[in-house]
Image (cartoon, rainbow, N blue to C red; front, side):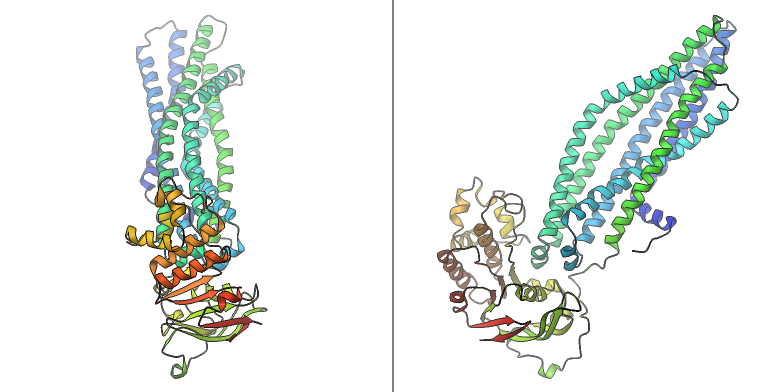
Length: 563
């Protein structure tokens, strides 16, 4: 990945503030005004103490102005915290929605090369780093700069003094923060639970991406992610409201404690035991100086973390996304003689297909065959010879390096992948199921089926007994990726899903591998009964199963022969 300039990176990060930019500038205005009001307070106190020193106790004007400034500062601070919180949640939402959309449309090969934990980290942790920078650090930095310049300018004219009062105020501040953080902690736990669900959904997408693509349910999965991301956003806003109360309470307590200390010192000065008013002003300015210095260091740390997070996310955004609603271009495809392309009766045909995952080791080499519509074909071969890869080419998970694949007379590279996949039912080796209910697994793309259709498929695959034993029947949750089901039950549920849709072409990758002989026969009968007009291409390692098919395609030495 090319390393962009700092200005370019900032421009990319700023793009995530869409929908919150007005709020961002309002937060800056509140922060700057709050800092300015804070800088005025030591001057008012200076006048107040000077009057006391002169035995002038007509303090109503100064006292009223001082109390008004303190309250206005607290109110502005509360508004600033709430506004910056909204900015942070908006930035997080926008970044996660964009990143999750991109992840759902990456090439299949990318998922094979990266762990699911890496995706989760980028969606959750890296977006949070930018949230911290844009919601708090930048706004606080601008406000702190105003305070810092004002305090330094004032301290130039004052002398050094003791730090006892600063220690007391710091201890008081810690106690207040600890008390105010209790409700925030509870809300934070709720948010972390929602984030965990988002992480689980993302891992499900990564682990079942072929299932999602084959069933054309990218939009369904994206809606699930979108719902959880928006829920996290709403809970984050609730936490922001808590912080908007606790933060000003802490600041108000510190200010009151500081003013009290100054008044006590003023009384001592009036008694002749201390000099005044410079000592009081110095203490106030010094305490105001501590915060900006700490915030400056925190902002630098947040800036580095946010830039690193943006770089990691940009690696994902720079990858070429695949649109399954548009045709693809096949690399190195030679010109084709359409007069001798394939038989018009063929539903599926390969013509001189060559494929490899790299340029050195071929997986399929000059593979050609035809499958006539309604034909039942067994695909056999040793493990690792390329049977699953062949299915992946039909589903357009990968593109052949040369040669052509035709479905119903159409070159699949010249039509959108989803238009082909809607006519194909694919059961992969893993018998992928998704987190949810039995019903959502039978009908992931939300088509309309009657209860009789559901029940017929379940009975045909001997799943009716399982479903009737579940507490909520077909609407019972089956755990994370079907964790409450056995391997055989997941396998039959995957088969039931594709049979329910009655596709023109069934691609079955060892669908009975985890089943006993009796259940296997029941499954094969169910396929014949429910989908009598479907064309079938099935991977099997059992000779007795292959013997039941119209013909057998044997894959060996990267090529095929037909029996």
